[in-house]
Image 1 (tube, rainbow, N blue to C red):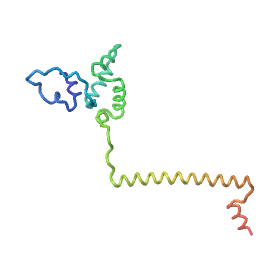
Image 2 (cartoon, rainbow, N blue to C red; image 1 turned 45 degrees about the vertical axis):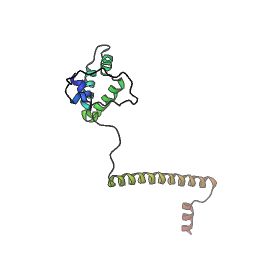
Image 3 (spheres, rainbow, N blue to C red; image 1 turned 60 degrees about the vertical axis):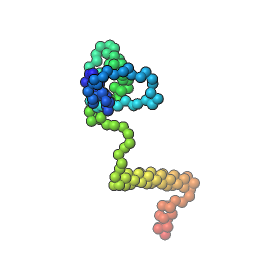
Image 4 (spheres, rainbow, N blue to C red; image 1 turned 60 degrees about the horizontal axis):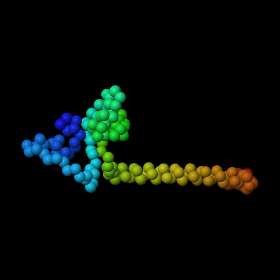
Length: 153
């Protein structure tokens, strides 16, 4: 078995145990009721992406993808991850985010409150400007003009 195939098999018994002394029987041809999601190690992803980058002849990329049982979207995603942070980004697992500490939750809460208040303030400023324009169009006295005329007398 090639070294790359061993890298590919995460948590597989084939990658961790030596070859059995008794010959293995043929695999069961039945399709599993529940499909198992494939998991690729960061080293395997990087090795495949590097090999794909070396493919120069026509059809070499397709042969690589067929041999490894991958889709072109895998390569696209892995290349983006490699560009974003090389091997460290390739090893990142998807799933639930880490829980925030009490201080981090408070910061997020205050930031969202601040953003909401800023939106409300901008809306209030817009309303005041519209009211001023409406008063001038209708010829009604505004608060600013009423205060200025009251202070003159």
